[in-house]
Length: 288
Image (cartoon, rainbow, N blue to C red):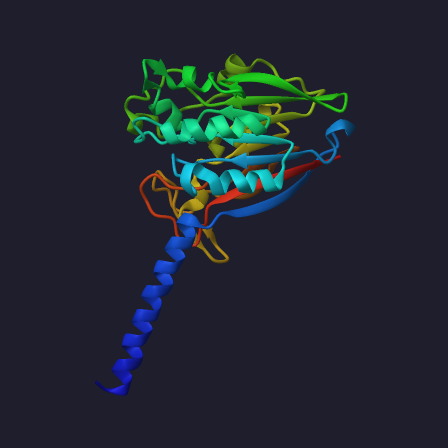
């Protein structure tokens, strides 16, 4: 074998090993992003409050019974935990592992949970109960197209959870990839927003950010697009789960008018392997 061939073969082996290592990182290495969001509507009682987002877990377990994930959340010690959909995967026929995780998570944290498309796909399969009924079994606030309030240090903010479910047959996922959403649908589901208060929204699909902003959301937590699945350095996400190239809202903070949206990259992927895109949870700190 010539010296030139040895160099070429060595380079190929190196690239293959680097690819395998990166794939392993993108599946197993938990990362944390810390973000500060400033808004003059944040009341004094919520100045410095921390919100930890979990999105797009897709029934994956980090360690036995998700021990590594639970330990990391305990270490971060957030004031609130926000689950923004696709915590369960539609191909998970029993969801025993996820239900065990939610039981442990809600035992030690104040948890707010909103739906994603995979929860919608998985409605009628668990022990004669719908998934919605199962989620009500846990000690958490389940925001199913509804609004609640959070009180802290004598002040209050509103928190809503939205996912479109009107006129959409989720037994046929391909028909629900791009549900049509309007301002009237938001109002019919959530009512009019109280714009005197700071409004936090959990909305799995970031596509409709402008509508969320128009409704009155000051800060939206979203996910769904898995960070673009394949992250290209200096460019961003390459592909959405629906095979859109370079999705607009791939990850991070976005602004529209007076509203901000944080899009989490999530922790797993349904079908297409992630690359240069490790599992991520995010801690957002509100400041006045």
